[in-house]
Length: 231
Image (cartoon, rainbow, N blue to C red; front, side, top):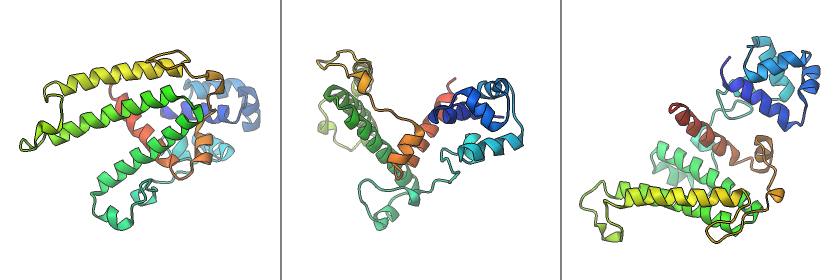
């Protein structure tokens, strides 16, 4: 069994608010055995994978981490909504890889701002927005500079300084955002009231953002696949 299975079955159980003892009883196994499955100490058989998939009403592919979609649906670029309201004809003019990644990011950012709206913190919204802006700025300048004929007068920061300065600024902004999210003051803003932070889970996100949630899950999976290569 892969490493995703223990994490996912633990997540599903906690989403339902079930104790290990209660879930084990309903699954017809001992609590000790379920604990071993959730910790990855023991591997289960195919019959149990099917059984627990039915129990949580998810696909086996989802349990095994082969897809971020709970019902095992394969994501297609045409299935993703376009937050910009562009037509299919507009999409045809773009490279399919460009269209897919743009939708993944735009839809995921729309969910991020929905979360920020619920938190209701001017400081956190400002710092998160600044972080995203710096990231876009840095990548924009990199692409802009691929052609030496493009006039650098568009920018006031020299070409040799912007990469390092952008990285440094992003680190400062990330630190400020983290402090505010922890309820501490930073960058002239008060920390959030953590007691009123929105309750979130994959199930809640899927129910409240059914159209854009698949984009978010794929963005998370794609990013974590890359992160795992660094471990």
